[in-house]
Length: 231
Image (cartoon, rainbow, N blue to C red; front, top):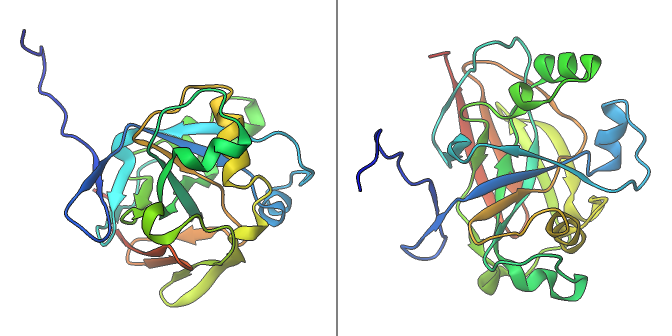
């Protein structure tokens, strides 16, 4: 049997320390998972259950590759995040086993067309056009948990043109990695290849064409993403 249209290319990320690649299956994102960011977005930072949204798999952009300034926005924001790469399937995963399902970790940017997201919020419409657009998920190489363990603290920051914009510690996650996996796996069966962007700290802000974003998480790695002119 042949396909009716051209088969899309496989989306992968490099695995640090070798020549293996990690095939990306789905991208899950956690909303408002740092209290300070919840406040800057005008929300109550109390520990309400986490909520999730998705980005398309082909929104992935590898470390060092540029993203084009996207259409339809005049307010493109950076959101630096710890990314969790799932390595073992699971449904309704118990907290004690949650980290057993993690293959590794990476540094990610959840790029956001903030003006479109805010307009969607005001009208009660879905966020997709604010969050789930082309090249909206830059991500570094995956660091295997077998090599770095399961980081639960460490600095997280992003600089734009050398100026620090966001700076916090992953220990400030409202819902930590294990808890996030537990909640998400109650709603869907997690599969190898699933990425979880775990939320961003305060300090989100706009970038324009010509800017250079440099992200970092202690013990996990670095991400370098230039912003190019619109295509």
